[in-house]
Length: 172
Image (cartoon, rainbow, N blue to C red):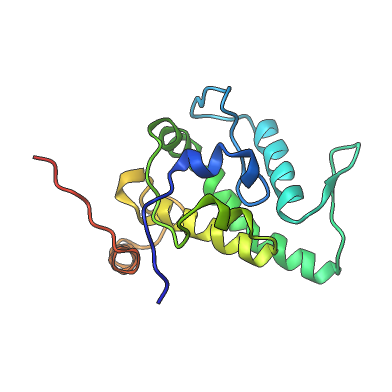
């Protein structure tokens, strides 16, 4: 069983230029305001996919990726629900960035994430973050990624909490 920990925080992942090929980035200088225009989201998604898939952005803003067509399409299809889950929760993402919320991940250091080179490894890392947005009570975006039925969500949340060793401290 994989060991999870709470050593990494939102800014460690999403405001770290060294991790731009693993996670979409938000600038340290920009003030997260909770909303993004469709054009901003499209631009950020293309930039993220270009770095995640080791591709380039052409002069007309299109994504160009080398590799077998079916392999690249499979990776794009795997990234799609993850990127949509992140950008559909942009108010919670910006709130989590402001408060620098703890994430429960199978990675202990940023260096481990920097060393991820394969698209499959990047998808796995992004999935771990999206699972936090689905089930982590501290992020407040509960059941906002996959829209599970309440009974199924409660069961999956308990399973996730057990898997990651989640213990919410009770404030007195």
